Image (cartoon, rainbow, N blue to C red; front, side, top):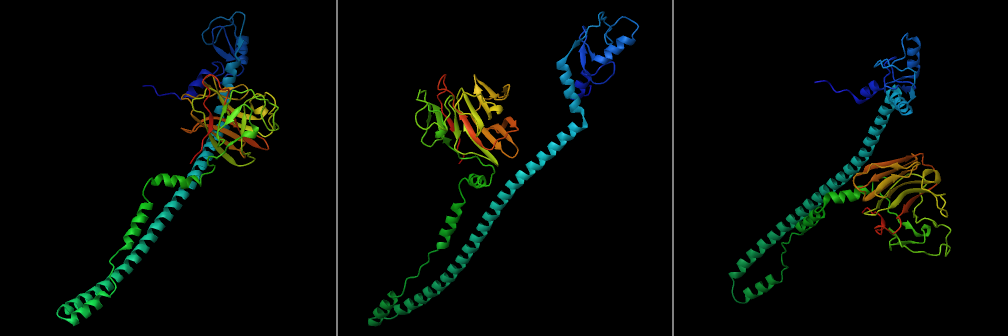
Amino acid sequence: MASAVPPENSLSEELTCSVCCDLLSDPVMLDCMHHFCRDCITSYWDISKTDPSCPHCRKRIPDKSVKTNQLLNKVTEVVKKCSTPEYHYTIEENGHDIRLKIAAEFQTLHEVLFKEEKQLLYSVEEEEEKALSRLKDIVNQLEKQIATLSGSISFIQKTLTKSGDAFIVEAEEMLKRPAVSLDCPVLDNCDQFYNQHKGPFQYMMWRRMLKSIHPAPDSMTYDASTAHPSLIFSNDRRSVTDGNRHPDLHAGDISRRFLQCINVLGSQMYCSGKHYWEVCVGNKTKWDLGVASDYVDRKGRVKLNPKNGYWTIRKLNKQYIAATVPWTALGVVTPLKRVGVYLDCGAEEVIFYDSESMCHLFTFTGVKSEGFYPFFSPGLNENQNSEPLKIHVVL
């Protein structure tokens, strides 16, 4: 059986000029569909004593006609770049950096778990010592009470041998003695401590770990003062939908509102650090979400793209698109139900995820602004798009 040929080697062979045996340079195509370097085929014909023909199949090319292949030229340039040591070094360097980042992130989680485990084990050990100490005290008390009971039994036995007034007097004296208690409260305390550590233990640890995760999902709300007047919000400002209204666009305070498009910003502006939030898109047929610069034009009808201060993705006509110039189609197979948005101000990146599977959707780079706002547009309330756009709250 023939051994498998690495894809890059097979591609390099297809892009190799049969005259110079090197990758094509300024490739041209002959009528016979074979490709050569422009300089190679020209030199070959110049030194050939016969009629011009294809060096590969020998088909005659009477008029020396060639066709420039720009697509093949671009592919060849990419292969050349990928074949350079610098490119391989960059891949290895990036892989090394990613491994270090993964190790550092998991080290942080390991430290949090180790700390929680250590504290819990210490509390169990401490409670054990307290319980044993209480138990020892109770045993001592019981021994004293047993001795008291033994004395009382002896006294009763002696009293029973007497009669008359002497028996009555001593019996009354015995009844005045305090009762002996044999209760064991330490067992109740142990049960209470045991019950504290029953139930969904891993969930309790996850809740504690969530406080140590950075960036943890932000608990934000919509800023209704920036919203197009047609938008309607829930009482907690975490759900928005188009009210399908035609309000007076100049009524009230409009200084911060979007007036031409049904958009709204998040309540928090970010200038530095790393931030993450999730948006429930459900079964909506149209929406836009992502990040907007603090300087965007809110009064006009502006296209959503990085040049205008928007880094967003959208759903439109059952397709998922990154709002680049031109648009970039996202390879989404399963319909998105919840989208995660990650803003790294230091790295100048906005990254989108399918937050149910945490699969990467798209990354914007070179994201620059003095301030950033979470951006949302629920789309018009038409064509089964009435479902609200919700900010997901992580417990």
